[in-house]
Every structure is written in C-alpha cells, then in structure tokens.
Amino acid sequence: HSINKDAGGAPAFLKLSSGAVPASVGKAYVAKAIGAEGVYWNPAGIIESEKNDLTVMLSRPFIAVKDIDFHLINFGYIVRNDLAVGVNISFLQVGNIERYDLFGNAVSGKYDDKEMAFMISLSYKKDENILLGSTIKIISQNIDEYKDIAYSTDFGLKYLFNDKLRFGIVIQDLLSTDLNLIEELDSDKVRDSVSEIPINFRVGLNYRPKEFIDINFQIDKTANRDVIGRIGLETKILK
Image (cartoon, rainbow, N blue to C red):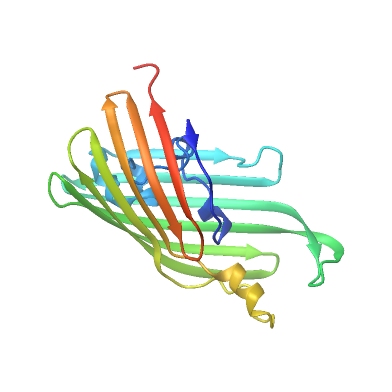
C-alpha cells in the first residue's frame, strides 16, 4: 500500500517508477533500495544485497493509453565484500502522438517520442554502517526528427543503524547537461521546459518492526517544485 504524489521532470521516463516493488510503495524507496534496483533509487544500496541479482520490468504505465511502453533491466554484481557495480537500461516509447503547430492547431501526421537511459553505478561499503554509491547516466531522447544526448550523475548514501532501521539519501542529476531538442526555436520558455533535467533530492527512512514488514518514509524535493512526502508499506504474506 502507498500514499503517493508525483512530480514532473524531464525526460519523461525519469519520472516513472524503476521497478515493481518501488512502485508498490509509492516510490518511497531511497532508504530500502537493495541490490540491482539501487542503480536508480540509491546506488549505495547495491552492495547491501551481498549477492548478484537481475530484475526485468515490462510495463504499460497508463492502462488507458495503449501507445505508451516502459521497459527496464537492472543488474547488480558483487565484485568483492565491500564493492559492487550495477547497470540499468531503461526505455520509454510514446507512439502515435498527434501533431500541432506552434499556435496549437492540429496538423496532419503523427510522430513518436523515444527515450532511453544507460546507467552504471559503483557501490562501496565503508564499514558495517555506512554505504556509499554513485551513478553515471547517459540519456537520449528522440522526438520526431529531433535528437539529443545528455549526461548526468547521482550520489547516494545509506546509514544502517541496526537490523530494523535504515537511513538513505540520494542526490539525482546533480551534474547534468541539457537535452537541446528544439534549439532553433526562439522561445526560451519552450526550449527550457523540454531540455532541462532538474536536480532531485530524496531522503528517507526504512523501518522493519518485523522480518516480514517494511515501513518507508520519504521526502522528495525537485528543483523549482514543491516538496513531496511519501509513505509506503511492504509486507510478505507468504514466506
């Protein structure tokens, strides 16, 4: 179960939930993230898995809209007891988009929006309590005949108080370039709304009162947007 309010950003697939479990807890996952899913949510958590893992998700985020597909692969690999690497490949396609001119008038023909990210992470276990991680992203977007590639970085930290309580913080897209898809347009307002990748801060707590229950609390702040609070509950019905 989750209580969740989302925020915008660019490109579009970075707003979607990377993984079924994070989606089920309303994206309150920065402190819980363990293993391969940490590549996106908090790279510090990859090493906490202590084993290699692979996750795959094939989805249509909006059931009522048949032409939107979002797919991803996460892989985490333990190099040694204190070091792990992770890889994420995410792909979003929005098809059959109606064409409009700059004045909002419909014109003939349709086009597609294709967005893809390749992420590679390094996760380091400093000691029994402190985990550190970083991710480098290569992001591409193709809208009609416009194409561009951007680069960004994430930095994460997890502090393990004990077996029941974890703290997590991640800064996403701290160092990034813009996706300049429609640079020839004179409107700076239009260009900035399409190309800018805003910095995103996530901070949270994961509390496990029982072995089969996880309660997640999280606060998100995206640049130039309101603060969002998230609460997620995860439980195991069958062992």
